[in-house]
Length: 233
Image (cartoon, rainbow, N blue to C red; front, side, top):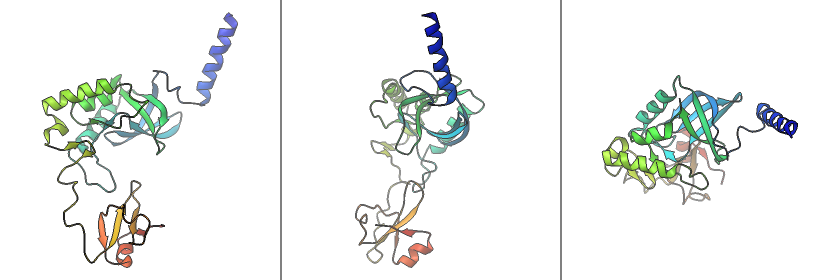
C-alpha cells in the first residue's frame, strides 16, 4: 500500500512537470506566474510554464482604456495604474476558473499579488464593477458584490459619476453616440471590431442593418483612403 501511494504521488508530480495541464480547475491551488504586461485594469499578459498567456480577470470589469472603438473611459487609467502597482515586484499567482478559457482563448482567473486578491482591491477602490457572472465561475460573486455595495455607498471611483455604471457597462457623455451620426447622403458604414480591424459595410451587405457605424462614408474610395476594408459578406 505504501509503495502504491508513492507511485501515485510520483506520477502526479511527473504530469505537472511535463506541462500537460496548468491546473485541475476544480482545485483551489494557485499557480505562480511572471507578469509581462498590464494591458488594462482587468487584463494582463503573463508567462506560465514558459508560455505567454493573456489573462482576463474573472467576475469584474474595469472601464476601457485600450478598446479599438471606444474612447478612454473615466477611471480606466486609474484602474490600469492600480493593477500595475499591485502586481509590480509582487509574487503573482492565478487561481484558474472552471473551463479555464474564454472564447478569445484568454485564461480566466482570480489574480493574487503577494496573497491579496486583485479583484477585491479593484472593487474596494471603486475601480471595477461586478460583471460577466456566468456559471460555473461564480465562486466569489457574493463576496465581490458585498465589496461593490460598500464602494457604492462610499461613492468612490466609478460610483462617483452619476449614471456612469449601467447594466450594459460604462456609459458617459464621451461614450454616447452623437445624435447626428446618421447622414442622409453618405450610406456606407465604417466599423472597428474588437480585433481593431477597420471594415466598411455597403447597404447590400449581409451585416449592414445590424452594424453600428462609428464613421460614415459617401464613397468606397473614401472608406479605403481612411484605412477601412470592404466587408466580405
